[in-house]
Image (cartoon, rainbow over all chains, first blue to last red):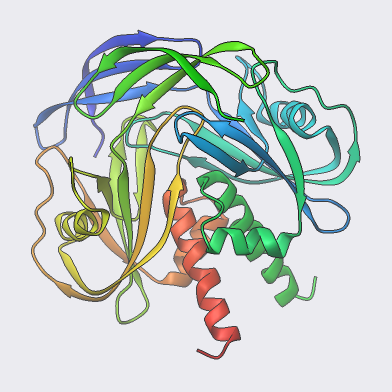
Length: 182
Length: 182
């Protein structure tokens, strides 16, 4: 099924994104082009307080042209390990440090045109560290009961895919644990 | 919290994607730039057979450099209604037509840099129509028991975000319906 890249042209090289136009040959012999956004990859963190409440961040997202409520997240620095990045981003965006980290899942967000793979972690045993967001980020964090967050996924008040995934994933895991009496 | 766009420059105009570099002023007065991928938006469909099994599609995704198992999906044609697009894509990619459509949720896949919003539908009462994928798509569809698909989300065999979201969302809805005895 693999597509063979015959020709690859970089059409944009930015600070965050690189864009290529690739000429490909499909297994059926058809020649086509693919527009590919090359992204370093990212992490997202579902931070769970001892109370069971979760920590979400609110920020204006220009591409969505609105303020979105999301789990903390960020782009990998070159050569950075996902878990290290997750620890850094959690503290930068919320001020929290976590004593317990678990990887939930890794997902391609838009595999039709973006190479971005996001690694989603669950962070527990939270203690307050020091918040220091990047100077070009305006972010406010808020504490939300898990049941309310789940409700916000169902009524689509949460409009961010990684956030919906993380909340639904954790909820399903929780119900499994309950099923198994864990 | 809004960011004010001071300057916008189109750096790439492709067949599927447009890329802009926007100079923005944040509410704290900081000037920054945003690299934005402008996308027409998309739809994805969770097709559920009378048996309760679901229909997934397998295709090579160049940006992921691997074959991914996903729910059927596609990009909106200019001016196309999401539901119309969903009906078209479901039949193109799987051959199925659905008697019952429900909107599950609309999500921004990568709101940090992409304008893409994907509308996820649930399609039921499926009957076989006529499969006719685009000539530059090599897609094979397969029928998967819902419980297996859910398992594949948990063990990360499913690596596509919209697919994980749709399966987890539908599963949570199902459990709610069961809770309410519906």
